[in-house]
Image (cartoon, rainbow, N blue to C red; front, side, top):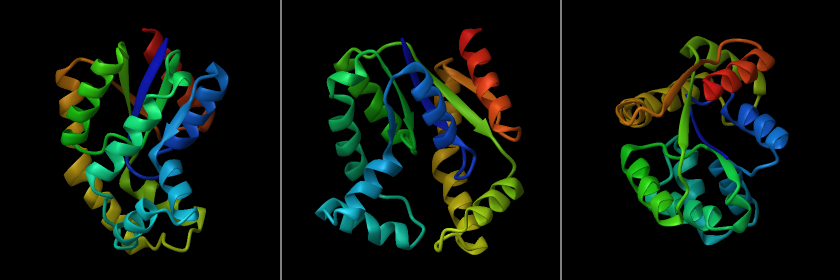
Amino acid sequence: MTRLIFLGPPGSGKGTQAKTLADGWRIPHISTGDILRQALKEQTPLGVEAQSYMDRGELVPDKLVEDMVAERLSHPDTNSGWLLDGFPRTVNQASFLEQLLDKLAHRGVKVINLEVPDDVVVERLLERGRKDDTEEVIRRRLEVYRNETAPLINYYSDRLILLKVNGNQSQEEVTDEIKKVIAS
């Protein structure tokens, strides 16, 4: 049973890797980004609220995201495993998730940290060509990531469930390395 949390800066390939592995293992790829994009597209109250934060390059408040994740992880399709991408982003969210997973009896979680240098991230995100991805916004997102999300590396390292993967390789090499570190 595979239960993985993906960490890494924006543009590190978390979504791509999570989707590839989830498809191969036939388990849900739970992306807070996808959940948020759906809410934005449907202009739900949550989506409208989230949009105002995202437009400023800020993180959506914990409570909004926690409610969405809790709802999604309670679906029956998650019982045989899942890959979580984009959550948790803060130590508070990690603590919330730990309690939620205990309540749901989801055990054996591992955390994959995709390590990619900032300049590579900036280059990748600029190549994607999204209208909100200017170099200034990308560097701001990286700064927010370092300040708010990087402490998760210590949090999960202390719990002995953090696995480091070099995300600055080809897509296939990263996938292979993830499979190797999980198996070891």
